[in-house]
Amino acid sequence: MIMVTANQKKIIWTIVRKSGIEVEDFRDWLQRNFDIRSTRKLTERQAGEVIRSLNTLIGNEFKQHPYTWGITEKQIWKAKGLADTLGWKEPQRLNGLIKKMFRKLDIVQLNKTEGSKLIVALGNMVDEVERGAKSYA
Image (cartoon, rainbow, N blue to C red):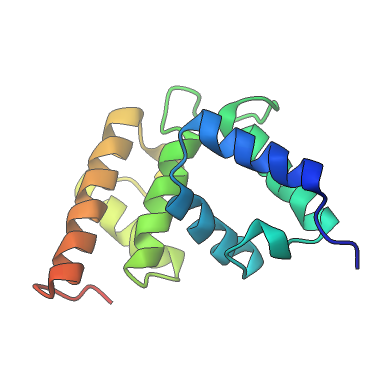
């Protein structure tokens, strides 16, 4: 098993910094997708997947989005990360909140404004859980 190269790590962290992704959000994404929190533990193949995903996220690779007027990939990424923080491993939990708030069935059906409102609502829920005021698990 060949481990991540120094050049791949440099590319990953350059993309993360330039795209404005918060380091903790990136590490959460790594945890969800690769079951690790450090780029040092990636294999060379996994690092390639991370680079492709990040490039797609920031628009360096063409990825057709079914709703070009809608929610951005970055918003989807952030919302799913916050849902994961709440312990919502099943997509039905997030989709249920979306249905209740916006009367839509899936996150990709939201527009940018609705995506922002969803992120704010999820962030408030995370704050409530951290303060011990509520539990959403």
